[in-house]
Image 1: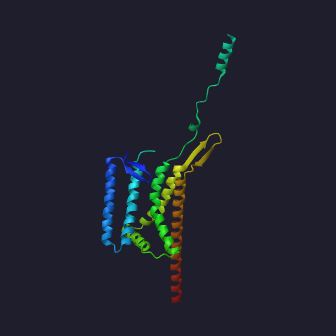
Image 2: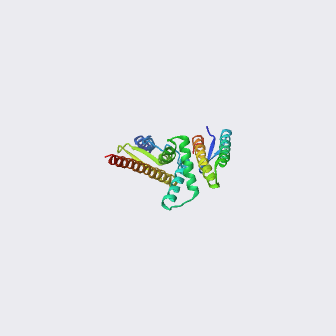
Length: 72
Length: 169
């Protein structure tokens, strides 16, 4: 199961499943921004809430990448 | 002819090489890949480090930025939404996991048959060592903070109880 290739601290997709996961992750980030922006009352509030969610989803994406990337 | 006989004798008397190579005698234990562990380690310590930076700015430098308050509001919102396990997982388990993964990537355990002992070596890789220190440091600081906060809260409750008892007397 080799879905990703490590590039620095990021995991680049190398298969259709990997690209699908990346699209889902980016889609969730966009959705999170819209959702956070709807409820927040300032720019910094929006950004910090969004940043928090992006790091969390990035962490889970990287965990999947860690276990499904090729051996080095 | 004599020379040839001598040569044959010499060849026959040669000792056979021992096929046991050195690497068969020890157990190598770098369980995880060092570069991949470093990559995932940065993700695991990112949020705890950000939180510590916010706490330091707020408590030590007395910075009154809206960003810091917004971050703590976000944390409390997540705590209320996900339950008690969310903060310990994020700020204690994840940094410890990062430290453990990087430590396992650097450790090499060898069993020395001749001396009947275990030799532990640590590879010197700057990124992994830094992540071990950051992960352990963050977990220790937050762990101590939680213990101290808890003990202060308990002592305050005891003090209040004592004051109530004194008032009733």
